[in-house]
Every structure is written in structure tokens, then in C-alpha cells.
Image 1 (cartoon, one colour):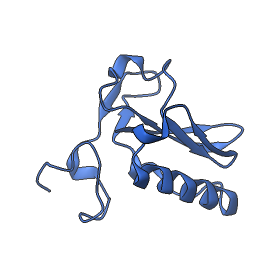
Image 2 (tube, one colour):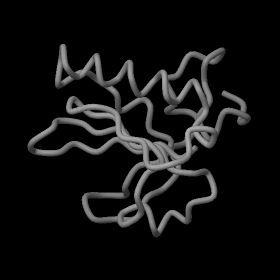
Image 3 (cartoon, one colour):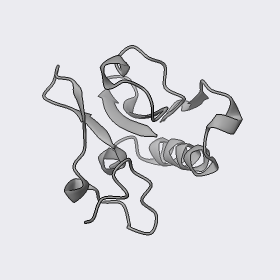
Image 4 (cartoon, rainbow, N blue to C red):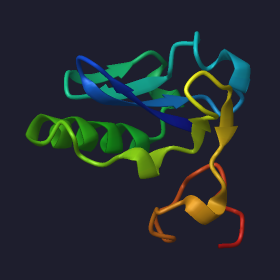
Length: 112
């Protein structure tokens, strides 16, 4: 899945998961399959389309944000915007901080 992390004024960070076939130029306007913030977990897809580990991670992120709205989650992003208003681009594997045995990022197959 494509994962983005966006910081908002009202809710702190929001982690969003999009389908892996989503064109990157549509990420700004498309509804994510699932998102997590301090407000809760929102699912906009059939549950069988959302991997169980993503749903569990989203619930964990929500609980974490309730305890600490500024918890670091940027490392979860598989895609980031180039500059403030630029397009989304894949995060290079070298910057991935996921534990190798748990990494399910878009670049998980790349050597580290």
C-alpha cells in the first residue's frame, strides 16, 4: 500500500494508506483506503481489501496519538511530497527506518 503522513493544524499527524495501484498524482484528492489520527481510524474500503496488519497498525497509531499527539510516525511513509506543494514521490529505501523483519513498505524488496 502507499502510505503518507501529513501534519495538520487541528489533528496533528494523519497517516493514510492508499491502494498500491493509486496513481501518485491522485493522492491529494483521492480518499485513502484507511487513515489514522488522534480522532480515530477511518476505513473507506471493504475490510477484506485492507490487510490485517494495516488495520492493527492504524488502531495502534490512533491509541499512540491519543497519548502523544506529536508521536513520531514519519518513518511509516512510503511516499512524501517534494517540497510543500510538490508531487508525491517514493521514499528511497535507504531512508526507511522500519525493522527489516516488519517492513512492508513499497520498497521492502529493495536491498538496504
